[in-house]
Image (cartoon, rainbow, N blue to C red; front, side, top):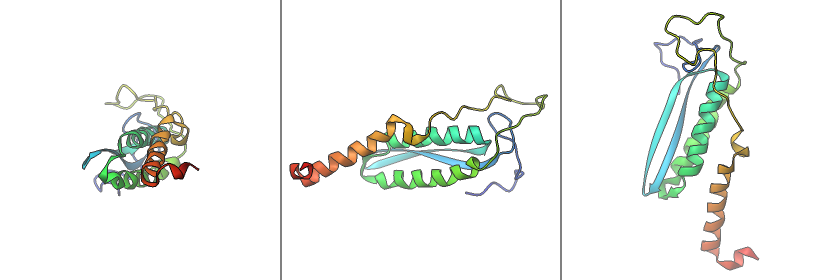
Length: 145
């Protein structure tokens, strides 16, 4: 996804006001039986805030995106999010002005904490367990030998 033409390319983070920032869009997907719903968080993010939003959306999709037929939508969202995360991952650490600009929010100068990377999160076990159960159900007990 490209940045909207009405916004400058070197903008500030929409969460903490730090710079430099990049425009990114992260999607979370919920799949239930035969339907799905997605939620998108898009905007200008500094490195720390962008990685935090990316990790939140990925973890949510990993937990809630495999419970139905359109699970392919989840896989597409996970890959798209990883591509968008590269934009913010390449940025240097956020910097803030000594004095907050007029209209700065309550989080000015305090970027979100990115937390643990997605592969180190326990939620990664959900798709692995589901794939294992699917193999056991499809192939029967002989798959375990």
